[in-house]
Image (cartoon, rainbow, N blue to C red):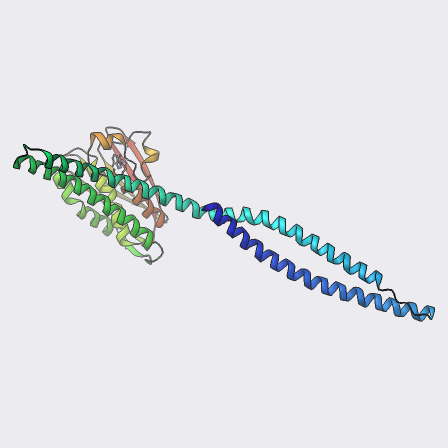
Length: 327
Ligand code: ADP
């Protein structure tokens, strides 16, 4: 598919270059021939006047125009091969970002389908096993339903995450940035995560400052929901989460700090990749996530021309530092 498109694009580049080259060659040929004929005619008149005889010698003119034609054909042939080669390289370069985007999209679709298929298969199997069970009781049916609801909840989270990613991709160039008070966005995010905090008896200690940032207000709230939600998810009950802000002349730094399980050194470079979950998150802390939150957070930060860094100590906690340009 990539090679076929590359050949087609090369063909178009070649067609445009050859059309231009041949048109210029025709014009150059015409002008040069006219000039040669005119020059030969003047020379002929001069000689006739000087020698008082009639000279009729068109052979030289024909030879010169013939040579011009051959030279132009050779030049066009060279242009054909050179521009063919260059066109092929250029077509490859033009298509490279599109190819990378398509590869990434295909990888994403296959990862998402895999994540969807696993819980669906497990739901289907346990239901089929239950139906086949002759000694099934109301109690076992209830426990199956409870387990299934947990799986369905996870699937719902996954579909919401996928929808969120699709929405960011679509709205990227549609939503006009507006001035957002980052303190209000963080407060909204804290409200949205308050029930999870309450359920784990986690307190949040916040130092927020009114600061304007240029961006998408909904995306900024989502960004802090992801970071605060993670801070709570990966922390023990009764611990604390801190949200702190530091404002400088050009930017604002927001730190989301927890006292939770921390992140292993070898996981740190990967946590912003789609579908990446550390072993400790998957095994020790069965939070039911899909490893999409931080990749969405990164996307939002990139859209706002900001940056994110992480510091973490296993068993002691993590600190996510978001820096955004001031609006
Ligand atoms: P999810 O939390 O749904 O698994 P994320 O993309 O939000 O997905 O996070 C990716 C991984 O990064 C998590 O699985 C976890 O291993 C790690 N992580 C993120 N935030 C924290 C945190 N505050 N404390 C410890 N680990 C974290």
